[in-house]
Length: 296
Length: 316
Image (cartoon, rainbow over all chains, first blue to last red; front, side, top):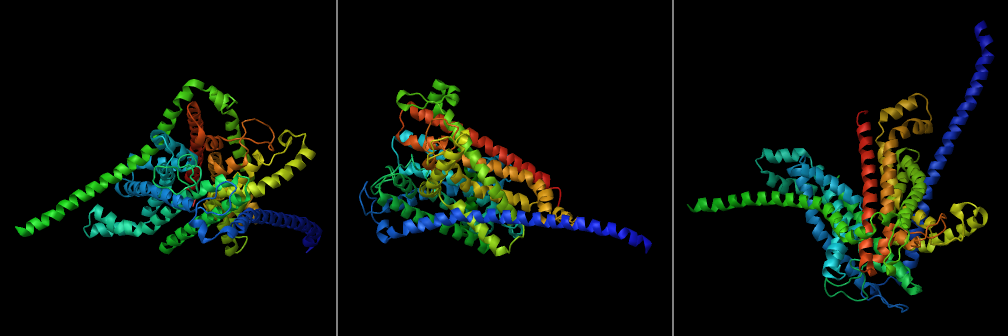
């Protein structure tokens, strides 16, 4: 009893100090939380601003005719970007035709045939390094091997540049897709007497297909939005392309060209083209995620 | 007899098909590996005349005068490095805050989902659209800020006037937005990879949430966050279109953030279309420097990332 009484004041004062310390700690906790939340919400501002402006400036000109008409000449009104839409589709198509089979086949090799081989390790490292190469370097490469040798800017050169850009994405996502196939499936297939080839073609690939498609969608979405690889390989054109070996318009280069001219109509058309591009890229991304989540 | 022959055909097909497929997959892999070597080979051979003529002086020379055939990329190397570092300065705190925010349970899951979606949307917006937005939104804002800064802070070299809209600062601000998803995604992976036991241990010792984050979780995840920053730096250095549209593309060196500058990627984007002769070779030389810098930064980032993974692999 005595002890408690004599220690009581000491005990209380201690707890008071501790209480203020606890309050300070919890206050500091609150402050940091608010800062963190505020910084996170701050990122909403630019995105909302971009989407708002793309819609506000892009919607007025958006009509069916912009997809069917040629770009207006400097200072002129009207027109559209039909040739740029087709150019983008054609060049992304060429890129996909080259990088798709290459990426998927090498993914099969490094995941199914020889996962531990030197070649497989080299493929993984190179694919990683290729993802880190600036997209404009893909354009420089296509310039060196196509534009310099043929002596002209062309849709084909643009396609080659996009193929290099898409290759690592397709390769690495396909590898992930194949890795996602349960090994029990493979073992069951071997157990039933299937050969390696039969297992890959009939069991592994069908199961991995949705995830592979996701990778392709992501690669297409990225390639469609890229400007740097096209700017000096496909260049631009005011007219409908008649072949793959002539300068070709694309949506992204149109935005770039029209954004720096002093004519309000052209600038508005750049916004409309941005709207089409952003809508396409977003749609492709969402589809990719839906296809992926269907499987998982 | 007839049965045998009908059987033998499919067997032959089965044997040739698989081998062919195996070979095809091998060839595809070899081609994929060859791509990188091919890219570097093509750039080096195309740049060779310029490399021979200018040597290493190309890196240190500041004059880029195509009609006198004098080329040097020092201002563009400085611009590439400076714009990326300033962008990181902006993107790092934001990205880290979002990563912490997404890996902790401050707010209900739906709110976190929205933030995550927003950041992923930022990654999906094409570079050229960032550039267009930058021209009409960021440039005017930076111009206003620049005029104010020159008036009030003009004594500081980085804010010396006159203030331009197309400036290093404008390009860096937009770059920061563009690399934010990279910083966020990789930092978040590093934070969620911190073993649960460490976090619980900190809470059990009476730590508040932020004492746990600052004292235990962040130090554990630090190498991963560093890797995120390095990889984002690599991305920023290679980013082309938005920078080319906003930075002003000047080869004049200046201490001021409010003056125009230039980057290697922007130089390529602006001049390749109309270049001829030695200018093409010099641009290829510039491309080679860009490849070497970005490859170096990316390899460094990957190594740090691997080191991180090997470090946290033990504790679970």
